[in-house]
Amino acid sequence: MINNAIRRIKIFDTTLRDGEQSPGCSMNLQEKLEVARRLELLKADIIEAGFPISSPGDMESVKAIAGIIKDSTVAGLCRCLEKDIDAGREALVHAVNPRIHVFLATSPIHMKYKLKMTPDQVVEQAAASVKYARKFCSDVEFSAEDASRSDPDFLCRVFAEAIAAGAGTVNIPDTVGYAMPDEFGALVRYVREHTPGIEKAAISVHVHNDLGLAVANSLAAVAAGADQLECTVNGIGERAGNASLEEIVMAMRVRRDYWHTDTQVDSSQIYTVSRLVSQVTGVKVQPNKAIVGDNAFAHEAGIHQHGVLENRETYEIMTPESIGIPKNRMILGKHSGRHAFDEHLKELGFGLDAKTRDDVFAQFKILADKKKAVDDRDIEALVMGVSATAPETWQLNRWVVNCGSTLSSTSTIRLRHKDSSYHEQVSVGDGPIDAAFKAIDYIIGKEPVLETYKLNAVTDGEDAQGETIVKIKWQERYWNGRGVSTDVVESSIKAYLAAINAMEWELSAGTGKPEAVLQTESR
Image (tube, rainbow, N blue to C red; front, side):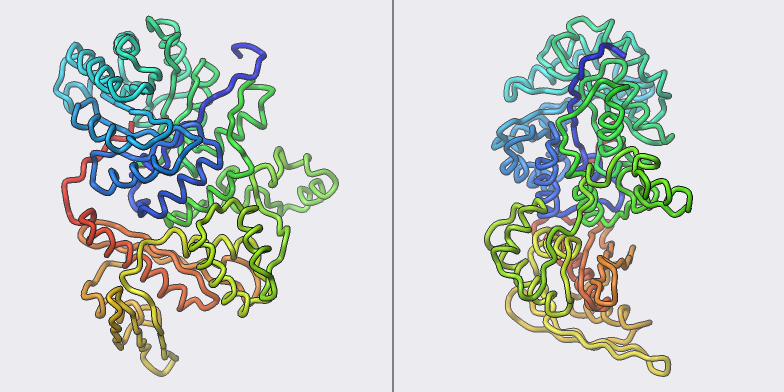
């Protein structure tokens, strides 16, 4: 290792940008804001909020996030083009700590076939773009896309010019997840030792997981002197995803004796952030996922169970509490008062405005009448159902289903439109949920494709809430919806309506229409 002192590594979270680019992981504005708040609570150093020029929706979300985040740096991604940088400046105008993040490819294959530029032209454009960005923002990061397949000496040349132009951070991405740990560590070390002016800039890495080595490569970069790691919650991202934030953070924290590094991340927030991202994207964490998977702290083998009962350290190298797996500190029920409920929301990390607290409390009282006890997972589900949803174009007024082994399934759905009009439809389907969805389609006048339907139990027991997650497709765009209820049919209807409302909101705002939305290559 470099030395025995504990060196602080910055965490650059790109869940809202690179993570959201993953197919099917799109989030609406309210969901992005809730994720951003949780990342700030997690103490991520930098939150990359989006790619402002890519679409009106991304511009709006970066602006909104920049306006509410105070403790973390908020970054916007831009190509090395003045129009992109202008969009980034506009999106970050209200940020307390803004960062403009520009990128340009440096590998021979990208320069020849994608950019159609000579190496000299790439160097010139990189330096000019950094210089232009510095006119508006003192914190500029430059990324050399596909750095791991670039000529090391050319990479050092580009970085030297970017630093001379004012870049405070230079990023070495393994864009296609091609590098091996020893190889990637050697590249970082080479850049650190052969780039003129590198002492004026931080070295960052952004690693993809195509060969399952994103975390290993990120840690190899730390050993070689990297100062910043770019990652996502649950490792979501394009193709096989990005380096996983929770794995990086806990690897350094559990083995601080080995790495001699740490982060400022509040690890007790990891579990709730992981659950939130899973909920809003509809992408369930695999059970055997390191750190946050359902089986991460489960022990079935008898010898393991015996060892853990005697001393947890026999088979657990970290405690569940260290990542924030909740204990039921307070069981709430129908007799619980408003003050206790509000205090418990604060304990769970929810900073809600007064109206949202009122709405969540109203839903809590309804749930408490159906359940004997309401635990933390129930409350999290209620908050997400209220706070991270799009404005309601359509609201469920009532529903009825009839089904059985000897009769066709029928559903009657009555919806209230935002203009206060009521619309009712009866439909027949292949089961009660299919019939309900078809009735909704008739009412709204659209037939989106149901891409994904998932049903989970929020808690255990006969009175558990059912959580339904759906993904719909319309005009080559995707929307997620989530619903919770002690009745699985009702939770399904709520989830489908949530997705419909997200679709209607974006379409009405002009951000959901088919358009040539710019996509960044995963750096």
